[in-house]
Image (tube, rainbow, N blue to C red):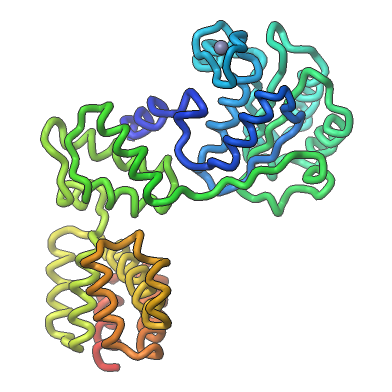
Length: 365
Ligand SMILES: [Zn+2]
């Protein structure tokens, strides 16, 4: 686990140009820095692991960097190094989830009042801002009404809908998006190259797919794989074994058995799968997401554009063929059964039996 954190920290972008994805955010921020029009309050909203605090720190570095020749932080001056070494007095990072007391609010108010120690701006990054207490919100609101010239607030949240409208109206808002598959692969390739790791494109792709667009998860998975595999080239099998990730090809093979209503072979498949030490929950999740793809292309071939990034050309071809073997009613019924089975399995003492029941039901449709 430690190693996975290391990868994430080590390759945390130190310049705007190193950030993968979130182009709309980066572009606007760079332009604000260039034109000295940085706002006093921002809201970074979006799912976890999409770079909100990373970009907040970049902004803090950029506004306080003493080398003003570029909008990029120089990463060399005293201010930049302080931030990179986590000892900057003028970058205050608050986790709202764990700083909810009256004292913390009072302290925050105090800290806002005082001018920065030696930088231009005092930057407050408030993570999980939706969890601030009412008192803290009110204190913050007062400050945001008339922000001191030396203060910049960056509120980060995964749940913007929980933020008070009065706060929302006083901040410039950026919505962070999950990264595209291509973006995640691009970053992983860069990390693998810098780490001197040999890893196949297919293996990287599986990691990226399973990260579902969350860079932090992708890097943490890559870190685990690196820790286990040492110097040898990392293969798809390694990834499956180490991360317990189920290759989509297994789901595709299994669906073939469902198409043929071959419950005997499908049950043997499950038994073999479990005996090899694979995780059934992950298998059924993989089966569910694959069946959803089948449903989409069954509804309309054109919808394959929604899934083509996540499948190879060959897999997409198979998917189109398999989808044709089912009626839409059958497919939606299968997904329903699988979803219910997943739910039951997580609460069951005999998850394999839940899976077997589902197989029998689907094959006897
Ligand atoms: Zn600097």
